[in-house]
Image (cartoon, rainbow, N blue to C red; front, top):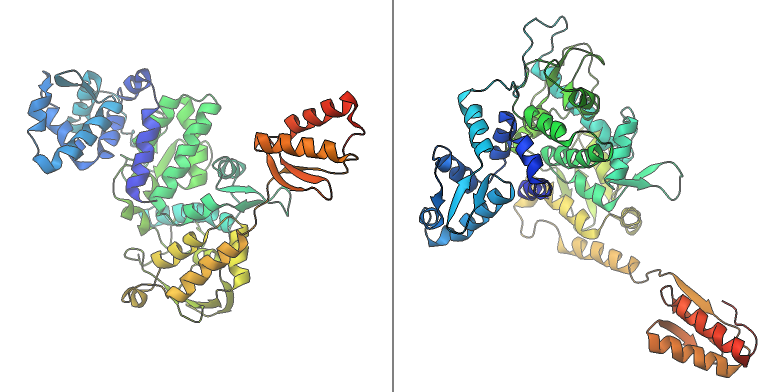
Length: 476
């Protein structure tokens, strides 16, 4: 899932909200700014062009803003802006929502008294923290969730609320082999392939659904999430301006590493980099989190070198051998889902892709395409010099192993057998065939298999025929 797809999901969620909810959301300048920052570039340009024009604008005049090639993108942007209730499209003209116009102006000029951008604490913190500590804290909390998903026990187990959210979002499900334990799903593995910013928003979208179920004020929840995206990294903010619902949210957001509080009930909180990049439109900011998994001690974190971008580390050879130049326990755990790891060195692990290792991944719901996509995404720079990036022999074999497993598919059905009279069997078989619910039959053995959906109809037919004098009942 790309960042663009992620934004589409945000739009899809917001577009389900009624107009009344939007009017409440637009009361906060920080929310107006956050929604504006999530718009496509042409949408932002349109908002800025119309912001200080109080009268309606003719649609034909707006169409003249772009050339012929840009008409499609303009139409898409107009559609999104109207679905988000920022613009209202009439028959011949377009007008901007007055509430959005006023509060967005306040966001840009510093007007209004909403304090929707947070209230910085005026008194110094007795236990100050710096940006390096916040980065490491966020990384520790978030990686604890990811480690749990891939089945490693290198970090503490996530809270009960996080586990509920993992299960509710179908990123994990109950293990059939170990009752009470969760295991990663196909959707969960796809989740691991995303950048951190996309992962965080995927979590928060599920949190919004859960908030509605818990009858929390959805507007207050959304306002706080959008507010966090506008706060300054390293600054500490007072909880005094937060509502009861938003103060309740702090406990959950601490578990995700989005905010830091020294202890529960503290009167100040710090947004981490996971929070300040929520609406930045630049997911790369979130990848600046340190890759180390060391524990946070005290209020300061040791200085770490920040990696530039997501460098590839996987080398795949035609003999199915895999070499991964990484020290990250999380990345090693992900590889272990579909690679039989054999050796581990200080900065590298080596293993082999085998039929059994791929089958184990398939049993967890991971697809061949996801395995291939992961190795392409994390391919070593030396691998990227080749075309194609991965050896075709290995790629084809992974897909063949998947096809081998998918040759048979279990389908619930009913077995009818031991008919005492051939005529009864023939009549039941014909009835099932006419209904299109006959899966298989053997006239010599007087046995047939009926689909689950057709069972009641065939069962009723057999009972009526036998009741009419046809003989003994058939066993199913």
